[in-house]
Length: 351
Image 1 (cartoon, helix red, strand yellow):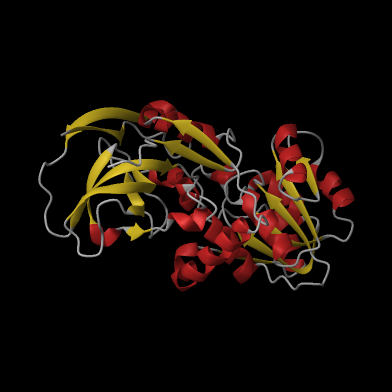
Image 2 (cartoon, rainbow, N blue to C red):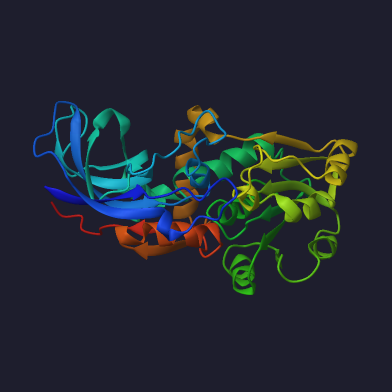
């Protein structure tokens, strides 16, 4: 059987901006016979995420992410349907997901590396398992629970940077649901600011490309900032930290403004900002959701419940076609998406 796949064509370099041409499509043969323990899957949806920028380098800078290899198939979060199974706990027609799904139209995979998903949790929107009811949702929920120190009824203010992205768009809503009295988002366009305030329940939004961020935050957060969900780093984070209160908390989710630079993770703060952090006793600890696997199942159930109750609104930007994986990746890295960036490979659920 001939299938299509996407391989890493070139590396952007540690200080380079990724482009669609860093990836290329090719055709390969899939074995006709699968072995015991394996399944043949058809890919339905694939995810592109900021952390993948690190995998484009020869050294990812972390011990839990392996780099992608040149001319080898690229992988990441994926959802598919099983077309044939020789695994005792997986059957034909089951929907499955993996954090290491190959970017190809069909694949033969080890069934032990797959997790069965229940479409009822997402009312049939299977792509949500790659977003709000998946790793980004868990990252937002567990990050806030573990590092945010929110106490319901204590009038805390939360600021979210990258607020219109996969994690940010959820984090602001979850902040409210867990007890923050005020949530302010920071993003890069007027349209995204409107979506945050009119659809996602943010109390206010700042376009960081328009005016002085610190001054706007001073007006919008009159009581200062108690919790900062940081997806961005850099100058935006310097502005937020300057408005943070004594004994406040930074949830270090991502630093997308720094991923195209050769700096350690988490990137060091500017000296003036670091002085504020120490003086005000602001916590800023690295957060890795994979360290909290025991909280995944209850977390997914909570996210699903909020979604079904209409308390958690989900935004997606969908691009169609495996051939557009590179385009989708480049767009995600430059803020082209609102909510989760998804690539639809197939919407054929029939067998």
